[in-house]
Image (cartoon, rainbow, N blue to C red):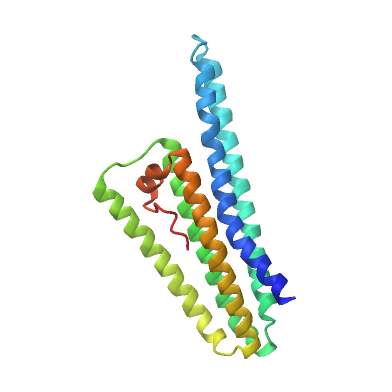
Amino acid sequence: MSRFIAYGFAALLTAAPSLAIAQTAQPMQGQPMQGMQGMPMQGMQPMQGMQGMQRMQGMQGMQGGRMGAKDDVTDNRIDIVKAALQLRPDQMQYWPAVEEAIRARADGRRQRIENMMSHMEEGQFDRNFVQVLQNRAENLSERGAELKKLADAWQPLYATLDDAQKRRMRVLGVLILHRMREGMEARREQMEDEGGGAMMGASTGETGMGRE
Protein backbone atom coordinates (compact mmCIF):
# COMPACT_ATOMS: atom_id res chain seq x y z
CA MET A 1 0.00 0.00 0.00
CA SER A 2 2.75 2.44 0.95
CA ARG A 3 4.65 1.68 -2.28
CA PHE A 4 1.57 2.44 -4.36
CA ILE A 5 1.05 5.72 -2.55
CA ALA A 6 4.70 6.68 -2.94
CA TYR A 7 4.74 6.05 -6.69
CA GLY A 8 1.46 7.90 -7.10
CA PHE A 9 2.77 10.91 -5.25
CA ALA A 10 6.02 10.98 -7.22
CA ALA A 11 4.08 10.78 -10.49
CA LEU A 12 1.93 13.72 -9.48
CA LEU A 13 4.95 15.83 -8.61
CA THR A 14 6.54 15.35 -12.02
CA ALA A 15 3.34 15.39 -14.06
CA ALA A 16 2.10 18.71 -12.75
CA PRO A 17 4.98 20.92 -13.96
CA SER A 18 5.08 19.12 -17.31
CA LEU A 19 1.34 19.60 -17.73
CA ALA A 20 1.58 23.26 -16.82
CA ILE A 21 4.39 23.89 -19.32
CA ALA A 22 2.66 21.93 -22.09
CA GLN A 23 -0.61 23.76 -21.55
CA THR A 24 0.95 27.20 -21.26
CA ALA A 25 2.77 26.59 -24.55
CA GLN A 26 -0.46 26.01 -26.46
CA PRO A 27 -1.53 29.69 -26.74
CA MET A 28 1.88 30.57 -28.22
CA GLN A 29 1.64 27.80 -30.80
CA GLY A 30 -1.57 29.20 -32.23
CA GLN A 31 -0.48 32.82 -32.63
CA PRO A 32 1.89 32.52 -35.64
CA MET A 33 -0.70 30.66 -37.70
CA GLN A 34 -3.36 33.27 -37.01
CA GLY A 35 -0.94 36.01 -37.97
CA MET A 36 -0.10 34.24 -41.25
CA GLN A 37 -3.76 33.86 -42.08
CA GLY A 38 -4.23 37.62 -41.88
CA MET A 39 -1.22 38.60 -44.03
CA PRO A 40 -2.52 37.83 -47.55
CA MET A 41 -6.02 39.15 -46.86
CA GLN A 42 -5.59 42.90 -47.10
CA GLY A 43 -8.54 44.99 -46.01
CA MET A 44 -9.67 42.38 -43.49
CA GLN A 45 -8.79 44.37 -40.34
CA PRO A 46 -12.21 43.82 -38.69
CA MET A 47 -11.85 40.07 -39.09
CA GLN A 48 -8.34 40.19 -37.68
CA GLY A 49 -9.64 42.19 -34.73
CA MET A 50 -12.30 39.57 -34.07
CA GLN A 51 -9.69 36.82 -34.29
CA GLY A 52 -7.55 38.70 -31.77
CA MET A 53 -10.46 39.01 -29.35
CA GLN A 54 -11.31 35.34 -29.74
CA ARG A 55 -7.68 34.40 -29.17
CA MET A 56 -7.52 36.48 -25.99
CA GLN A 57 -10.78 34.97 -24.71
CA GLY A 58 -9.52 31.48 -25.48
CA MET A 59 -6.26 32.13 -23.68
CA GLN A 60 -8.11 33.43 -20.62
CA GLY A 61 -10.26 30.32 -20.61
CA MET A 62 -7.21 28.08 -20.88
CA GLN A 63 -5.53 29.93 -18.02
CA GLY A 64 -8.60 29.35 -15.89
CA GLY A 65 -8.49 25.67 -16.79
CA ARG A 66 -4.81 25.48 -15.89
CA MET A 67 -5.49 27.02 -12.49
CA GLY A 68 -8.24 24.49 -11.83
CA ALA A 69 -5.97 21.63 -12.88
CA LYS A 70 -3.19 22.88 -10.62
CA ASP A 71 -5.61 23.11 -7.69
CA ASP A 72 -6.70 19.53 -8.29
CA VAL A 73 -3.10 18.32 -8.44
CA THR A 74 -2.25 20.14 -5.21
CA ASP A 75 -5.29 18.64 -3.48
CA ASN A 76 -4.34 15.15 -4.67
CA ARG A 77 -0.74 15.62 -3.61
CA ILE A 78 -1.80 16.67 -0.12
CA ASP A 79 -4.21 13.75 0.20
CA ILE A 80 -1.56 11.24 -0.88
CA VAL A 81 1.08 12.56 1.53
CA LYS A 82 -1.40 12.52 4.38
CA ALA A 83 -2.55 9.01 3.52
CA ALA A 84 1.03 7.76 3.25
CA LEU A 85 1.91 9.10 6.69
CA GLN A 86 -1.16 7.55 8.34
CA LEU A 87 -1.14 10.20 11.05
CA ARG A 88 -2.20 9.35 14.56
CA PRO A 89 -4.87 11.48 16.29
CA ASP A 90 -2.25 13.23 18.41
CA GLN A 91 -0.32 14.21 15.26
CA MET A 92 -3.25 15.78 13.45
CA GLN A 93 -2.78 19.11 15.23
CA TYR A 94 0.45 19.67 13.28
CA TRP A 95 -0.96 18.86 9.86
CA PRO A 96 -2.80 22.15 9.02
CA ALA A 97 0.48 24.11 9.04
CA VAL A 98 2.05 21.58 6.67
CA GLU A 99 -0.90 21.69 4.31
CA GLU A 100 -0.88 25.49 4.30
CA ALA A 101 2.84 25.55 3.45
CA ILE A 102 2.35 23.03 0.61
CA ARG A 103 -0.45 25.14 -0.86
CA ALA A 104 1.57 28.36 -0.50
CA ARG A 105 4.48 26.79 -2.36
CA ALA A 106 2.19 25.56 -5.14
CA ASP A 107 0.61 29.01 -5.42
CA GLY A 108 4.03 30.64 -5.64
CA ARG A 109 5.12 28.28 -8.41
CA ARG A 110 1.90 28.89 -10.31
CA GLN A 111 2.31 32.66 -10.01
CA ARG A 112 5.83 32.51 -11.41
CA ILE A 113 4.62 30.44 -14.37
CA GLU A 114 1.78 32.88 -15.04
CA ASN A 115 4.17 35.85 -14.87
CA MET A 116 6.49 34.11 -17.31
CA MET A 117 3.69 33.42 -19.77
CA SER A 118 2.40 36.98 -19.46
CA HIS A 119 5.81 38.32 -20.48
CA MET A 120 6.00 35.86 -23.37
CA GLU A 121 2.53 36.77 -24.64
CA GLU A 122 3.31 40.49 -24.49
CA GLY A 123 6.73 40.03 -26.07
CA GLN A 124 8.43 41.69 -23.11
CA PHE A 125 11.85 40.10 -23.05
CA ASP A 126 14.34 42.24 -21.22
CA ARG A 127 17.77 41.56 -22.68
CA ASN A 128 19.48 43.62 -19.96
CA PHE A 129 21.94 41.27 -18.30
CA VAL A 130 21.63 42.99 -14.91
CA GLN A 131 17.84 42.72 -15.04
CA VAL A 132 18.12 39.01 -15.81
CA LEU A 133 20.28 38.57 -12.71
CA GLN A 134 17.81 40.56 -10.61
CA ASN A 135 14.91 38.44 -11.85
CA ARG A 136 16.86 35.32 -11.03
CA ALA A 137 17.65 36.58 -7.53
CA GLU A 138 14.01 37.47 -6.87
CA ASN A 139 12.82 34.05 -7.99
CA LEU A 140 15.41 32.27 -5.86
CA SER A 141 14.47 34.40 -2.84
CA GLU A 142 10.80 33.58 -3.26
CA ARG A 143 11.48 29.88 -3.64
CA GLY A 144 13.85 29.91 -0.67
CA ALA A 145 11.23 31.59 1.52
CA GLU A 146 8.64 29.03 0.47
CA LEU A 147 11.00 26.14 1.24
CA LYS A 148 11.84 27.65 4.63
CA LYS A 149 8.15 27.93 5.46
CA LEU A 150 7.63 24.32 4.39
CA ALA A 151 10.56 23.09 6.49
CA ASP A 152 9.37 25.04 9.54
CA ALA A 153 5.88 23.59 9.13
CA TRP A 154 7.21 20.02 8.87
CA GLN A 155 9.56 20.24 11.86
CA PRO A 156 7.01 19.82 14.72
CA LEU A 157 5.19 17.02 12.90
CA TYR A 158 8.36 15.20 11.89
CA ALA A 159 9.51 15.13 15.52
CA THR A 160 6.44 13.02 16.38
CA LEU A 161 6.75 10.49 13.53
CA ASP A 162 7.52 6.90 14.42
CA ASP A 163 10.08 4.79 12.57
CA ALA A 164 7.56 3.40 10.08
CA GLN A 165 6.30 6.87 9.19
CA LYS A 166 9.86 8.14 8.75
CA ARG A 167 10.67 5.23 6.45
CA ARG A 168 7.70 6.13 4.28
CA MET A 169 8.87 9.74 4.22
CA ARG A 170 12.34 8.66 3.07
CA VAL A 171 10.88 6.49 0.31
CA LEU A 172 8.77 9.40 -0.87
CA GLY A 173 11.78 11.71 -0.85
CA VAL A 174 13.99 9.35 -2.88
CA LEU A 175 11.31 8.68 -5.48
CA ILE A 176 10.43 12.36 -5.77
CA LEU A 177 14.03 13.43 -6.34
CA HIS A 178 14.55 10.70 -8.93
CA ARG A 179 11.42 11.55 -10.87
CA MET A 180 12.10 15.29 -10.64
CA ARG A 181 15.55 14.83 -12.17
CA GLU A 182 14.04 12.89 -15.06
CA GLY A 183 11.37 15.55 -15.54
CA MET A 184 13.90 18.39 -15.50
CA GLU A 185 16.09 16.69 -18.08
CA ALA A 186 13.12 16.05 -20.36
CA ARG A 187 11.92 19.65 -20.10
CA ARG A 188 15.42 21.03 -20.68
CA GLU A 189 15.79 18.94 -23.84
CA GLN A 190 12.37 20.06 -25.04
CA MET A 191 13.25 23.72 -24.51
CA GLU A 192 16.55 23.33 -26.34
CA ASP A 193 14.77 21.70 -29.29
CA GLU A 194 12.27 24.55 -29.42
CA GLY A 195 14.93 27.22 -28.96
CA GLY A 196 13.11 28.65 -25.96
CA GLY A 197 15.86 28.58 -23.36
CA ALA A 198 16.96 32.17 -23.85
CA MET A 199 13.43 33.53 -23.60
CA MET A 200 12.74 31.58 -20.44
CA GLY A 201 15.88 32.87 -18.82
CA ALA A 202 15.21 36.47 -19.79
CA SER A 203 11.64 36.52 -18.57
CA THR A 204 11.90 34.50 -15.37
CA GLY A 205 15.54 34.02 -14.57
CA GLU A 206 14.96 30.28 -14.24
CA THR A 207 17.06 28.99 -17.11
CA GLY A 208 17.80 25.30 -16.69
CA MET A 209 14.37 24.63 -15.19
CA GLY A 210 15.46 24.91 -11.58
CA ARG A 211 12.41 23.25 -10.11
CA GLU A 212 11.48 23.45 -6.50
